[in-house]
Image 1 (cartoon, rainbow, N blue to C red):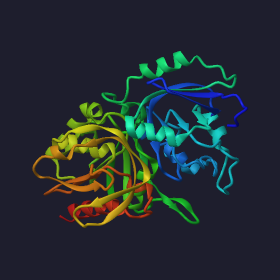
Image 2 (tube, rainbow, N blue to C red):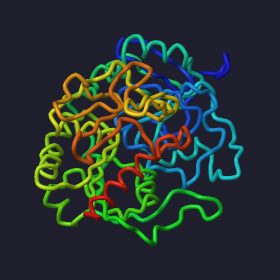
Image 3 (cartoon, rainbow, N blue to C red):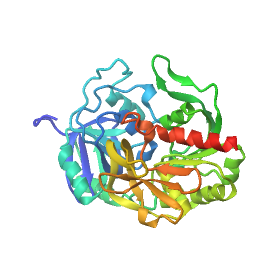
Image 4 (tube, rainbow, N blue to C red):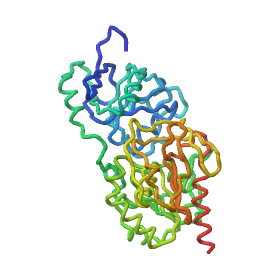
Length: 385
């Protein structure tokens, strides 16, 4: 935004701090928790990741919008993040895959964005003070009732105690057979599946389902509120617990009993990612905690404690499993090299495991795909007797 132009968007923090800039995308207001993401690519995937429900995302990388958007990169049908904050106004897209500009896509999908913001200053504030509650308004007239906007930010209830999985899960069950993108065919179907997998959708990203299909799985997706009887009625070879938003303790009110029943009554392999990791930890007797500002980015180093290997991972979570509460018989398998927080666990004597990060996002790029292969191998071993 030039120094002489009038701001058309305002970001208000609950402490009264105001950031002005140029609005793009939809007009109107949104209130949410504010986080920052350090990824250099993938803004479309981030905005459509259901794990960002209830959040506005500050992008630390300034070149947001430069490759436009396209239907293939959506992680779910519509954007889920409440809005975006960027340093520079989006330029016209320059990429052969672009179907439309980011600003048009946001406007059509009802999501607000603000450009021209000092994202360095904003990111420092988030790191030092924790993820703030904010209100964002885009008004082409440039007229803002800042007192009302700050009041909206202060009125936001926050994510603690909030079950958002019910808001982003599928309405009914469905089958998935699309595999990972490959040149030149694109997304090819899985025609020779070896395993039947039930994926419980707490806010599943499409590329996770593609990775399961690429690992040989015939995937049936069930809503977050599915019971153990619903899961076992499909006679699966394994159960997958997806990513998702909100407070894991709140979602655990109905998810944990289902997982415990599956663990108690069967010997099925179980694999969880992100919120699914936290759901599994809760079911095994551990606890989760709210982080100061969370982990959001595609450059997070994670150490596999069992192999010594370091993986470059993609992360998106504001809650974490408290590793000090892991019960006997449950091993911590991965830790963040940024802050030592828990990033993985497994049962010592069963093929039940989970990770906090996103192996399907491929920032390494293939550092973590072995987890899907491990899940497939455990199902194969069980079927072999």
